Image 1 (cartoon, rainbow, N blue to C red):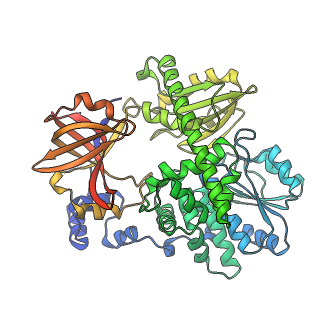
Image 2: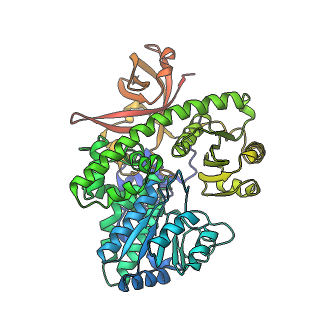
Image 3: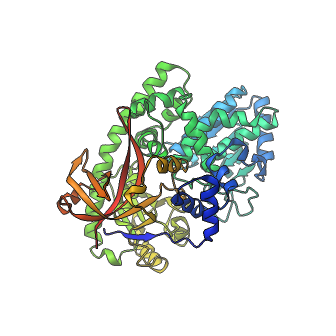
Length: 570
């Protein structure tokens, strides 16, 4: 699908740019990037480039934090059985592990429960409640779930089990009657930052506990920011504000290899001696951790992250890595089937604004990943539904400028249940309502989205001459890391470059080319772009859109462009 290139326009006083260039001694393109991030003074730039624990907000700014912490401390002191109830994804398992390890340090009587994705689905359930009851729980702390579990929490209340909800998902109108609720997306939230991940909120809770009992709150952040950073980056939340601080601190601690289980998994991911980047977590580490919950029990992910025995940690890492290999094969098969279904079901893609696919044989553990890939290919909000025993379980992913959670609130009469946030949602539905839901979602999306918004776009921050690309520019660009939503690795364009030599493919259909402009060359790689080779002749003139990175191979560092798109020069 052809992509539209959009240059980011910058309406700013030239004196602001000149001031940043002079005071920071940075290239002009770096000054422009800072202003695009809302950073217009050297002082703000210093805070952005050097995030610190001290810049994190006081956890007691959460309205119910005092109440929640006092209840947890009382449970610790009285040796009441505490159960951490988590989600089965990376955010949920890291959040579970943070509280589990932190409370164990305080000698709490604590365990955990994570539902089986295939049997119970997401969040609290009556089945899970019975399991928790059998564990003799007196206090349940939810992480990364619970904000919309009205019926399930009412059920736990009847069992005389107190529930503290910690979640980052969007609440519906009716809140559960929990002992305390910690969620920055509450309508009356007093917390100054609303985009924390589930793991980030778990870190906040543990920090508050440490502060309340007279320990250094920074000890909690420093000791568990690797897991909080991992959960934050993996959950694709905006890497702004506190999330960026947690992610940066988390990557630094992951680099120190303090967590035994994660260290084994890093080695199996091919990251043994690599300077870690957020992309390594998103594409290599997180999928492996997710595989535990997608293919079986997510308990193994928590056991891996909390392991203290090297042999046990190694075996868990090997088991999870093996599950990920199986998951990849199922992913590939499901994605191919889904694409075939799209072509058959929606022959007029120009008039299609929402994709809804359903099948009886899809693995419930992979439909979220495949939905993301369908969105990437067709640039339409997408829901994939797997049907089993008369009920459909769906996973949805969205595009920019379309809130899939808000969309589903308009059609909850067709759904058994649903939840999520702006870019991702889960739902359950009776099969007989799937077609009408498809129709209604397309009608709704057609009113919300313009034709331009369903055309894939590339936001180009600046045009570069290849002569401008040097080690100094790369040094500055690296200071913007970690990259992720709302802080993406900037995309540049260069016009009328010449293809040098013969392009070729490497690995799984990845394109390799060398571009020349004004006697300066740049090596580029385009993932899954090998099909473009017939259009790239030696000596042909093209425009390229790309991000920049350092490629380290056999202890040799070289600047490389990561292609986003290619078009013939005008």
